[in-house]
Image (cartoon, rainbow, N blue to C red):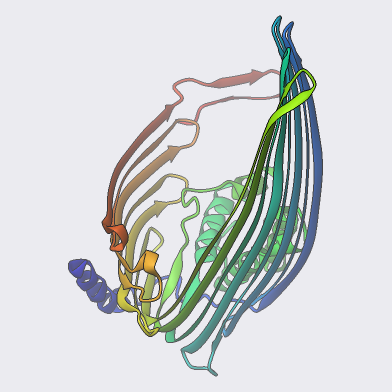
Length: 486
């Protein structure tokens, strides 16, 4: 852990001077906002029957769910703000009936149960820069509440003449779960997602290859396209199928700047530029940020259950014995935590082909009776050549030593977790693709309560190769003959 932290500090100091000049540094986040509201309802049912010479059964099930969501966001160079509200509910009901017959006895059983769940989520965040400086204040909050209740009942009857019995078991539960967090940060620096700059670079290369443009794009055109791609990420808030609207805007920019050879993009060029390339979700992020963090956490969980059972036994039609029992249980778990600490992160694209990211944080509990620390660090290095190669290495480390003075079940938490991974993928169109990855994960945890200890180690390796050694299509009079590109 100490060595990794030293390497992180050294790289944080050295990287800005090493990577001062690169094609991602001029991008600025365009000012744009979005709003969205949606609702979803579903209902389905099931009925089934099974029969045999000695038994038969039926089952019925009904389920319904209702969800609604509201979201708002704004993003710009100086302000980032989001808000989300989600409400959901679900109802399920099940009934099963069964009957078994034999030469000596017959029995019947009926099971019925019903469950209802509701949940509420409210979250929001904001980071604002102070004037034209690089100092920023960040606020975030999240709250989630879920409520569940249900019951189950089973009725059972058996007749073995002259004896008979009837039994009923029932169970009822209530579950309440509340979780919330709030955080405030004050720091200096800016971190931007500049993946769109790479997207425009790949777009330009592909348009030159398909001859949709005759010459490289002007810097102003690249800047406009990057802003369109960035804002276009949130087009799904306005359209369910947003791709055609995004590419309409891309074509508009190319046409207005006089970059297109023809009046519009041809179908081949449009399909080519929409094909995914080797980054496969790799974010190109740039910037440095360091600051102080204050975070509060709260959770409260309540479970209540009630169980009843009764049995009655008959001889002919006379009741000769009866049993009844009932019980209830309640469990409550509550925890609060307040942490103060610092965090730092640096993200650098090293030219078109390399991406380097590193981050670290340290936090201390500051509530009376709590002590300890919590640290985390991560570093990754990725190498990319669009349409061909993607390789990466990642290492993460987490360490916690926390003493909770007000919670007897979590008096001491002592643990660490680390991971290391390597991955490589190689693709040549129509010919060969290779995927290789290796990851090792390990963690150890110890709690003072009942002196529990655990250790886990996992090593995962994967190799996949796809090789197409022959392929050809002939359709005389329909299209030209085609074969694999070697």
